[in-house]
Length: 435
Image (cartoon, rainbow, N blue to C red; front, side, top):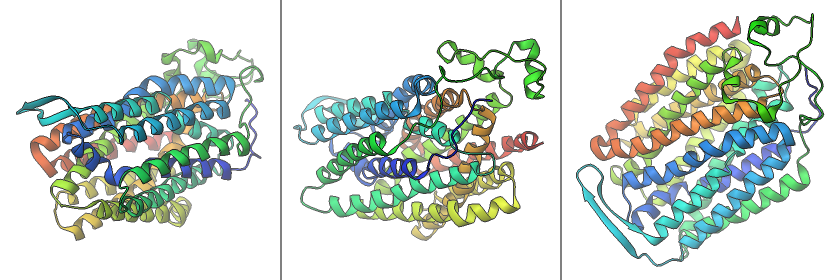
């Protein structure tokens, strides 16, 4: 088994994740307003949101593989450099004149206008997406420095750092967006935070793993007829490590349970992203929320999630296995989407509590199961492949969510709930992994 440095401190990675999430979440409260001001509608909002995962689908496996070969730190620098460039173009779009390039009006797509700043926003999201290995490489880094004993707790801490960013980001957006500069200050803040992230990676983050040139001979992806020897952990002979540069996509699925976990990853992201597209439009169109109300909602949601992924998750892990927490979390999530159909603010916030509890229990536990099943040597590549399946689900979910909301309105949330109930049923197979 390849050696892994478990002595690397976790806090620089948590800080990077926090700043990166804050930079992303700071635009959430007003992005839907911006798209509408630039001439778009629910479908355009969904397509714009899908640009990032669409390009991430192409870039994440490559960046994940590079991180296995050349190291996590170098790839994180590339990834966050792309994020910085994306925010520069985003800021540039805000200063462009809103010139109509062409209009579209149809029963299926609705009515919207394609304008110059809207096209630049699409370009900005594409640049960020193609270099968007942030999450998969960060997860691989976290897996490198985690042991089986603290893996789930570490992924819980990672989720907490993300949710802290989601608390501060929307709240900051509400404060900065209320000034006479409106969206300019929040986007400028996101740009500056991306620059700070690059500095932290360069000076504070240590490399987490040995590159492929330094790895010893180990047991990993053997010949087909000998695969049972590896999973039985027999030591009668050694197998030469496969070269990560030559690792094929299909090789990932030779590892036990990986195909099932990746499919589960896909459905989780599909259900979430149908909701992520439709809810902001619903908040503006159905609930008549302002930017400040949107910011408050996202901040409250993330605050509850931080609490769940902290003390609640630690307590739950003492009583339940990670596999059971995925099952429990998914059924809670399925119920919460049903409540979102209501236009009553009390029920909406009740749904937010269930969302935070369900996601807070399920997602860190699922990511811990995936990282343990992935092994050490190809952690980055497998995380990248999983991220690509998540990106594919995001593309489908974000675009379909926009179309569905255009057709059936708030009932779209029931589709998300149905998909998560499928995840709940599928999750019972995870108990076999525990065995």
